[in-house]
Amino acid sequence: MSIFDNEVFVDAPGFDTLSHPVKSYLDKFPWRSFSRYVFVLSGKIRDADEAVFTVLKSRGDAAQITVVRSKSDALTKAARDDVAADIATTLGIRKRELVLLSSRTGDGIEKLRARLFD
Image 1 (tube, rainbow, N blue to C red):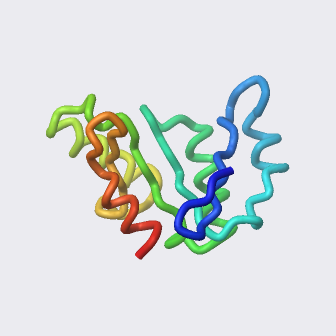
Image 2 (image 1 turned 180 degrees about the horizontal axis):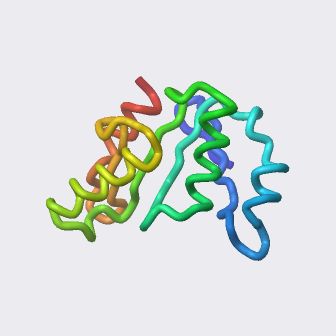
C-alpha cells in the first residue's frame, strides 16, 4: 500500500499463478473496496486478463478503469499502434484511453498522472 497526493494505492497480487489462480482471484478479491483501478498489461493479453477486466467492467464504472500497457519502450512506433489497437479491440475500450507507459524512459507517466489525478 502507498499513499500519494491523498490517494491510497494498493498493488494487487498477480493473477493466474499457482498462488493466485484466476477463479479464486475473481471470487475473493475485494473488488468493491476500491473506487478506481489501474489495469496493467505487460505483454500479450491472456484469457485471464480478459476475465479479470470483464469483472472490473461489470462491477463498477468503466470510466474508473485506466488500462496501462507497460514496457512500451520495447515497441517500435508501428508496433505501438498495433498493440494499442489490439488492446482497445480486445478489452472494448477506446484507443485514446490506453496509456502506453515506459518506466525506463518515462513515456506515458504524465498521461497516467492526468488520468488518475485530474
